[in-house]
Image 1 (tube, helix red, strand yellow):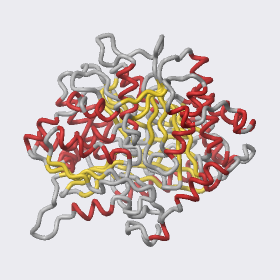
Image 2 (cartoon, one colour; image 1 turned 45 degrees about the vertical axis):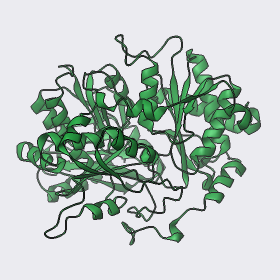
Image 3 (cartoon, helix red, strand yellow; image 1 turned 180 degrees about the vertical axis):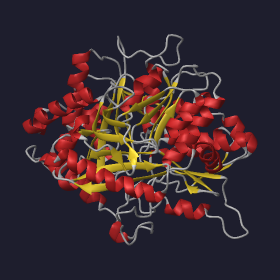
Image 4 (cartoon, one colour; image 1 turned 120 degrees about the vertical axis):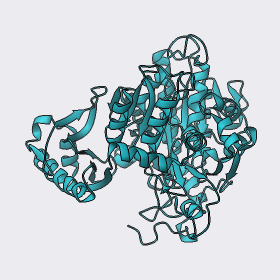
Length: 559
């Protein structure tokens, strides 16, 4: 833990924006260096110009690879492009447009020439592809659309990112991103000069670049997914903190248009994010699920003796607004797992227009409280590997009513049971917290306490353990038979999983369960560690025993 975690950023913590931008254009990446190769994680390629992992060459190559993929798949409709507020996002958007126009691709860009949240891009793709029609959205055929979002999500201000959203509106699957990454690395090796581009001033003036009002399209449609009138009528006081991200120009419009008692906290974008408090490791990181990054909002909501909080509810979002953070006067910053369980219980009890067979989507490292809630609701539980891409088809086909990740990303269906977005949406989760407050008269924290009283209290944590590259590779390739232990922290092991129960996809690691506890181990893609997620319904001491046992089980399995 950094000694200044949770404290306001100081001048020495801020990035040199000009240096970051200059290196974006000046650095020639070395494709033989693993750090400087194109690698798509769960949400696209991310990196920094400071270490040569996110440069003009990378972005041009990735965009050209996406063009090649679209041609191979017969995708000939417009490509929706959005960007967030990170310093590298604007130059990356310029590069993207230069390559797309040179390739003859029609591009839809923000009408205001400004920021576009990830959920707004997904929403517009789906509308273009027929989500609002009686036939429902298409994923193939003439004129079908897809998208690119330029964002490193909650990463530090030094970073940039780019991800591809497929024709289903959600993050592209691993087979697609793997192909794009391989092709992009071929182009990086060939050099920037090998990629066709139209100079930006000519490109942006081209008929191929069409201005699209993402904000109005998204904001005007919000009443179809959240009961905004109930929030207004109840007078729920909301403090919305964009954390300097792409939602910064959306929240004020939402509040004004729907007559909400909503105050935008930190209403300006700043590429240095100088107003932030430092995260656990002393870095500026727009992680709305981190108590350290959210320290200033938590302080605002802290109730003094004999006093009251200025808001009934405070919310946060990350850089591209696909994650949510919920702060209540009676509970502080909610654990994302706790809020996901609250959302699931509330939604499935209060969305009469949803399909009776729609299930609950969760990642296998999310809290088992969700399992108990889903069972109580009589809804199917669809447990997937980490990555929101695994929820896209379920939300699109409405076989899932809700899909959520332990890292504070989720989306759910419209009031009438049709698809809203197939990518994470921080707006509707924040607004749902206000709807819950308005309709139940209780905070989401109080709602969670009622779930605990019904289903039991649990203790959940994620820790890291050291691992070499060879050990991480062994962990990824494990079979269930590699686990020879029969008990875990005093309980009989009930399952040893290397594929997800909900879709049979490899989880890239291991999950071991008992009647009252579980752990999952996954290798880090960027550090010499593996991540241990664990939960106990017994006690915090038992959680520590589970974590210790997890290290021993993994060490034995990969030996």
